[in-house]
Amino acid sequence: MDTNTLATIVLLGGFVVLLMLRVPVSFSLIIATVCSALVAGEKLTLLMRNMVLGVNNFSLLSIPFFILAGEIMGTGGISKRLIDFSNLCVGWMRGGLAMVNILASMLFGGISGSAVADVSSLGTVLIPMMKKQGYDDDFSVGITVTSACQGVLIPPSHNMVIFALVCSAPVSIGGLFMGGMIPGILLGLALMVLSYFLAIRRKYPKGDPIPRGQKLKVVLNAILPLFTIVIIIGGVTLGIFTATESAAIACLYAFIVTFFIIREVKLRVMGKVLKNTLKTLAIVLTLIAAAKAFAIMMTTLRIPETITAALIGITSNKYLLLLIINALLLFLGCIMDMAPLILIMTPILEPVIVGTLGMDPIHFGVMMIFNLAIGLCTPPVGSALFVGCAIGRTPIERTSIHMMPMYAVMVVMLFVITFVPQIVMWVPNMIG
Figure (cartoon, rainbow, N blue to C red):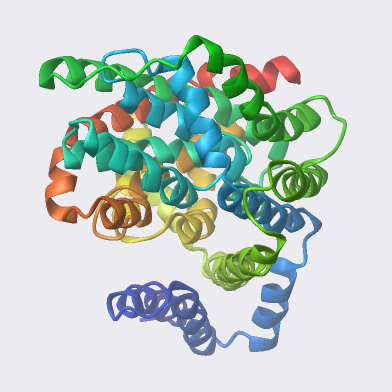
């Protein structure tokens, strides 16, 4: 066995073994990389330098700003205003509260960019409301969890920023934001259709209509929170500022609206908000630094080229390759979180998807993020599923079984955006 083969086994095998031993992903990446480098005779100073360079990027500044803006607005009572606005729009329908849940997730996801934040903020209000109105416990949790996955598609999404940074092909963060809009909205509409038919079949109630005299107040209360989305999407789309600048402006706007206009929480909670932001940011940046060294080691050992040749050796049919890649990502999404998978799998799959199949990097990024979003609500490590079941006090095993129709809808929508690239590329191409 030659040195390169042994180093490859140490890198990939060591990483898998460490994960099975429940070592944190960041430490698993670093330990496996260092051990592989020692076997291959690579200089550790070069790996450390690449770890530093991995986080020394101006575009990464958008991540802490997006996380902070989502934390501020999630803490400041924004969710109640968005729920009332969603109730005004769709609450009158059969299964109206489920529709409200989905639409509120769509709107809140456009502010926080996080599925877990969405479930935490909206779920604490909507899951008890749905159970009180006669919805099944598992359905209440399931629709909250699956609709929250819109948050990683509808801009802003710090996962899209991570993909743009790790992808070697030139890809615009703003283009990724625009590409995720229609798939995110279509996912919400598909879940609404499913909820409507399930509501008829299971005789779920209609929602309570908003009194005529309160409709204007509900709309006015929702305008300021929703304007955050306008700042981010409009500013980037019109070229007024970059994604990083839009994140900083959105953060400042969220701070002013939450603490000086809405004023449902005191300014002293800002300490807790900053602490939560720093904890999340530390995890993200450590992952990026560790994954950068891991990716460099994979490149040195020519692992992406080997995997590309292996996949093409299975079949040269574009559609079969995309099916195989999506199945692989769906499986990996069940056992690993989204951010590390983006960092690890993008350098491996990019030569196949972008280089061989000719897929646009924006289409590739949205497809991957949509795919891995499904992993957020699947056992055994789906973080959004864990939070939803904790709020709804339902067992994960039972809830997962009752979520099968929702999983089916998400997978169908994944294949639609995979094989119909115009859905993803229409807005970016129109804007140019």
